[in-house]
Image (cartoon, one colour):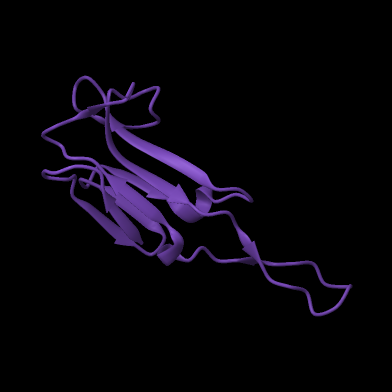
Length: 108
């Protein structure tokens, strides 16, 4: 996974288990389950009470943003075969992290 630190300061603790990312032992996101034929951004924010939420509309401050790449498919060896999806490679996922102390408002 590619990590980008958007600003200085302490970031939210997270762990990666296979194709799932867990933030602060609270919110788990299955990236493979959300992968589509196009790139998918997933905003992780905190609300006015400091609770983690998915989506900028539900949140007040950015905590992280995951960018899940579009699905890749195998090339069929012959015309009778359909392309098969290739499992998500976590090395192709990007996660941007914002500092917890200096919150970045969602509206910016």
